[in-house]
Amino acid sequence: MRPRILVVDNDAEMVALLRRHLETEGWSVTAVTGGEDAQTALGREEYAVVLTDLVMEPVDGLSVLREAQRLQPRARVILMTAFGSLESAIDAMRHGAYDYVTKPFKLPELSLAVKRALEDQRLREENRRLRAEVERRYSFDNILGRSKAMQGVFEQIRAVADTDAAVLLLGDSGSGKELVSRAIHWHSGRRDGPFVAVNCAAIPETLLESELFGHEKGAFTGADRKRRGLFAEAQGGTLLLDEIAEMPQSLQVKLLRALQDRVIRPVGGNEEIKVDLRLISATNRDLPAFVRQGKFREDLYYRLAVIPIRIPSLRERPEDIPLLAEHFLKRAVAAMGKTIEGFDSEALEWLHGHSWPGNVRELENVVERAATLAKGPLITRSDLRIEFTPGSSGELGVRPSLAEVESQYIRRILDEVGGDKRAAARILGISVRTLQRMQANMMRVGPGLTET
Image 1 (cartoon, rainbow, N blue to C red):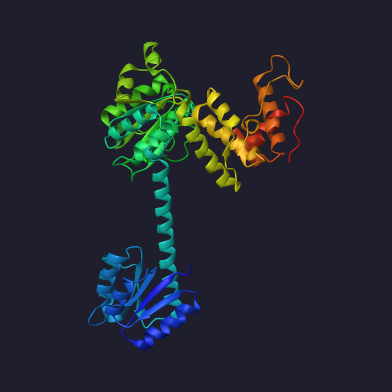
Image 2: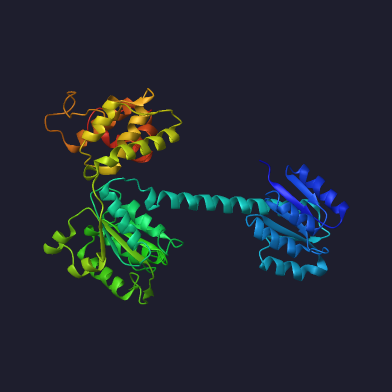
């Protein structure tokens, strides 16, 4: 739909001129003479931009601005004013007007002001939609689960979300710990602040301290500029330390101090920086066992586990499998533009019978792969899983290496999708670039795969 613009001026000739010009720009224009008619128009139709004269009687441009803010807060108001009323126009901007133009003005200048207002509205609307989508996606009401086990998790999220207590999420890989951490953030008083996540196992020990606390220029070889750490980036928001059990003991002491004193010191720095954030940590390890074995500091554990929340594995909540499978299928077919109605009875039986060692993440991967391979209106048993037995094809030995298993599996997936790297990467749960790198490494394992 064409953007709709409301033009307001006491001068009928000016109104007619502006209407003709703005319509030639491709916009839909409603033109009225006077502030009273403008207020009536604002109550009848929705406008993207209100272009109003400032000095009018008996209802002036400021009154039109206030009515627009009351009835249509997303509309952008541009004031037209004579040079002598410039101070009033600036004051109006302080009260929410988007812009002003000074009479006499050239029509192209007016068009430019309207275009800027429309672009600002578009960007703000897009940001609003994205925020709404993020809040919907990470709302714990939308973390799917009818099971008693997941309802218990939801109750715990509701109880702790609006506090600043440190939360420790415990659960197997793929069970949804990061999703839960984001839900806690989006339902907390820190929702307007940043959410920052870091995988402690994915960063080399030598770099992890700098990654968390930042560093000064020249603090170590390669530190050619000052860098903020993730603690600083998460100021006012939430920091998720995933795979916290993998944090080296030398850094556990510094993390404990940061949590106790609410200050950090960048590597190579002398000044301490106050931090204000909510910490959530997560692990798939038995952290109390790590404490007993001396691998993890007991005092740090109790700092992190003020509120421990255990996320159940998928095999502990089998009643949620059909619900999750349908959800992942709808999302997959929407992205692919395919029409698949659901699962046949054998496919559903297999979904219930599988042990799901990879939990929800594995289920999502299997359903997305099935949606990619499916040829009919229903997902069948054969669509759900590619039977893979290393050595069955004669390519591998009785006891293949991990690289050989990986190589054959990648070839099998690529063969199933006709060499489509994007589809294969989606099924494998990796990026296309990672797949290409793995293909290059496969040359060392066995017969190479021709690039497609």
